[in-house]
Image (spheres, rainbow, N blue to C red):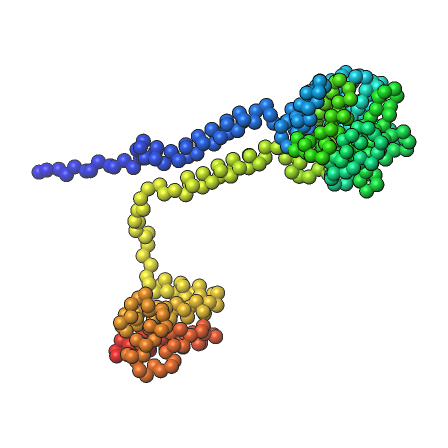
Length: 410
């Protein structure tokens, strides 16, 4: 007697080839993102500086102005701490403070003492009310005005030589009659030059826009930059930072009354607080999301036909759909469903194709030929409006059944 051998179980584990086919899309997407990130980091490495930075080639940077000054024999040094700035201050030095509003009150007072004793030139970029009062006592600020080409309207040689320049922003007033007030906007100057003791002076600029790379070649911006920043053989470009150790030695903080912590005299917007690389980061995240959606949306294999876990009788399905129609008072949908089903069935009996079963100009003549007694009510019955109430819907169903019986028996 031969004993039947049970068939060996078939493994359902995916093969290495199947695993590779499923995962290769994701691996390629990850590889593309890694390559793009490394390339972007390499390109941007060492060149991503902030606004008004003499090392930055961005539109809002100031490398073009720094290069022009170097070509004129002016040494340009970048200082990032208060100690570096105060140590470098001297009679033959121009100290440019790009963000005086970032300094704490103690830092501002210390900077004012150092620059006053140096008899050099100090250039303050858009100091706010508190910063202006500490760094140049007696000066008051006026509300910000848009930057636009302005005429010098003063006797200062540097301004008259430069001519029209992109000025505006914060405006300044002073009771000092010896001060030079230039580039007035709405009657108030946006550039103020205060004479200090000896040969030293302090220049307050309401806006840094004329120093930006994107504007330096416009109007008389380049000439004004060269004359304001190149009056001494050395230029110290001070970029204040909250990371400066001297900031933690004071119990104060950057002044809350200043309208802009960045030093440009304008109100800080939400986008100003976002790092400069946010756009590229958003693009990379969007690309990653799109690749992930494509990967997750792909078909993992051929379609497989599966048997339903239970069998549902047609009557139950019809009752369920009818209950949904009734719950939502969808008499129009129910009537159209009844009419469409009737048109489909009687079209075959009347010799009309399934494609033309729902075209009134084709179906109605064919049905009328088989049921001459239907008359003009045939169009309303098969293609008419929705019933007004449930009773009319029931009556419509009865008339459709009657019509179908007549077509079958004719």
